[in-house]
Length: 165
Image (cartoon, rainbow, N blue to C red; front, side, top):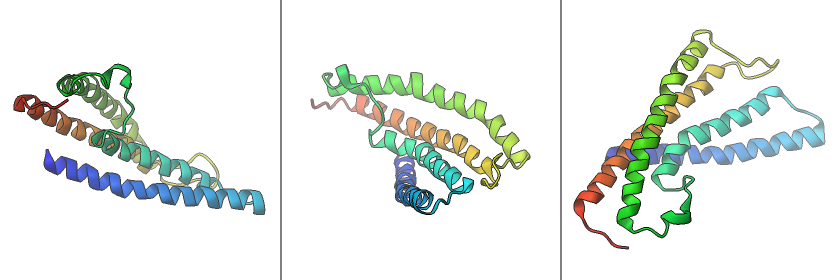
């Protein structure tokens, strides 16, 4: 459990630095487009590729540090024990099967893209679209192993029997 959390944390911190690069790239793109009437397809594609990497590889870290989307209307009023049970059940019933489904269904999609060395259909676009498509599988594998780590953490919390509200 500890090594999974450290691994995901390192990836999350590394990926977070892509936000700085993405902001710089977008600013340069805007400056070049509006002041110099210069724009290239590869720049626009690089922007959304970077965003995809940030989202896909950063999701596991967001889950780990509890910055993911959660409907807190009732959840925040529950005791710590009830919250842990809800988190455990939600992870087992929703997160793990969803990760498995995405990994399973996207694997062929990604392997076909690698097989044909898929590139951008746009003239002047990025040549290796298969790399960004591989991030789908990698991102959901990271999310899956983070989910397993959370399940172990929740079970340990429930076994300890120590609760503070």
